[in-house]
Image (tube, rainbow, N blue to C red; front, side, top):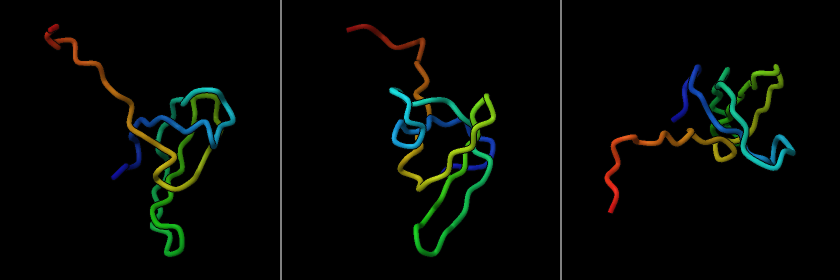
Length: 68
């Protein structure tokens, strides 16, 4: 579950951009009708909110992966 302060990627469905964009979770609400609703703010100040499925944690690349 996402928490306030987590870095997230915001779905193009919400942002109308071509790719997922970075943001920070500013609110997490347990809505009785929609379930978990996340609000996230981008670096330029835009705020997007929607159900949890429209946000994801950024994938961190492991620098120690072995090549096969």
